[in-house]
Amino acid sequence: MSINVFFVLLLGLLMGMYGYFTPNYVAHQDSREIPKIELISFTMYEISPKGIEHILEGQEGRKYDDRYTVTSANFSDNTKHLFQSIHSDDLKYQDNVVTLKGNVHYVREDGVEFRSNEGTYDTNASVIQTAGPFVLTQNANRIDGEKLVYNTEKDFVSADRIRGSYNLK
Image 1 (cartoon, helix red, strand yellow):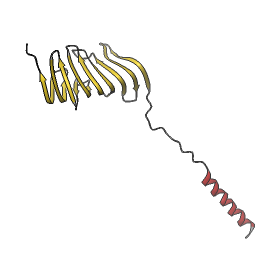
Image 2 (tube, helix red, strand yellow):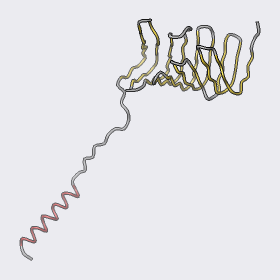
Image 3 (cartoon, rainbow, N blue to C red):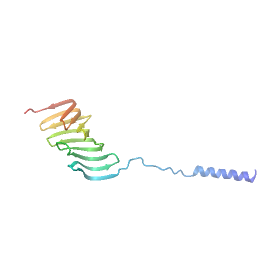
Image 4 (cartoon, helix red, strand yellow):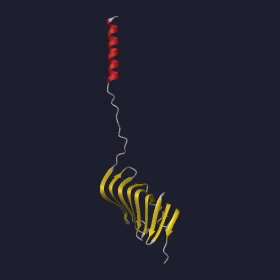
């Protein structure tokens, strides 16, 4: 074997070892979305020339590109003819739709209250919806049921499997 072939084989072997044992530096990207803003124990006001339109309070809040997420949230809406607020354990506000999960409690200034474990509120259409069980009360009147659709502007209520007690005056 000639010395040139020996060094070519040695060079090939060394290059192969270098290629095999070289560390692979693959960039590990964190796939979770990072919020633009994070708040703790906060109150946020949405103000227009008409005055304060919405108030969003919460324990922990995060603002992403397209939505807000809030824990222990209280969302108040002053744009309708009656002031209303919704409390929930978890809230997501995206495209003028508020998605609520856990201990949902809706209160309107005329005494209408609504309780459920989940729901959605479309702020533009003034419609509250829930797929699960709910309790709707006003003063001594009470309605229990499932699948609530409640238009807060038109006072239109639609529900399945309702049971209620209504006091006539």
